Length: 310
Image 1 (tube, rainbow, N blue to C red):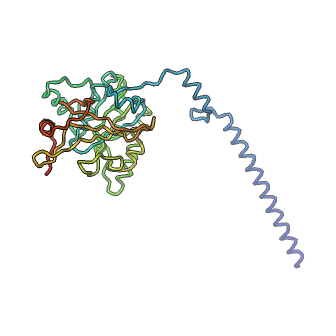
Image 2 (image 1 turned 180 degrees about the horizontal axis):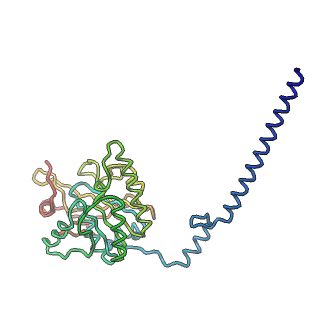
Image 3 (image 1 turned 60 degrees about the vertical axis):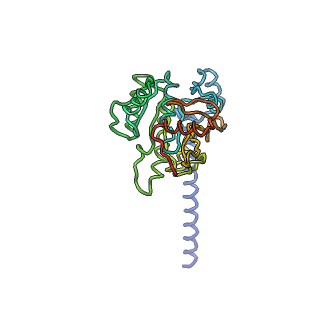
């Protein structure tokens, strides 16, 4: 009886081994079939050698370089490129919107599209009228009826179809990121990735204004000061941080019209640096900073909405 059990056990083990081998053969044959299908796959996401990309680029048109006209900035960035996401930030009332409005004038040939969430388009245009200046050539939704990524995309597509827009300005990030408690930083990260996706999908440059965390007024901010999520810097192609020089006038700390435009991320070329400018009646002009305290006080008084601090 014992011998019969041993035989049965041996037969069972042999049967298991045979089934295992058969299963292994079936898996090997299945993998071979999968590899054969993969070998002839020709979809748009097929794996190709870099040499194919080199050949394609050699026969395509030269990549469009969008120059700002600020020589110092253009020397660092070598121009903005389609499909880029550009972050612009600064302390409150330091001229973020004014800087991009000036850039809008400089990039008028690319039919810029504006999403003015923080200040209405009427307010932006009135500032130019009050300064006796012609508003920039640009486009904007007649009414800001939504702030979702889907709505932004629909307006971008409309501007491309109607006006061949290649530049998009969004003022600013907090208006398109929902505040959901502890998940806010994750929502910021997703929104930045979505914006980068829109830039690539529709072949445009997107500029997005972001706020800073509370920082000292007398110190140049860094990427670590961007408020909301580290993903703001990580997902962007370029980060421009503006800083207004401060000085003391009659015992008060005031913001001068001396502006440092700091390129703190440059994914395309890796070159970073600072460009000194002067804010003058809504324009940003590349030149050496003013140092006279009385002139600084006058400049401060003329700049719209800048607070004094003791």
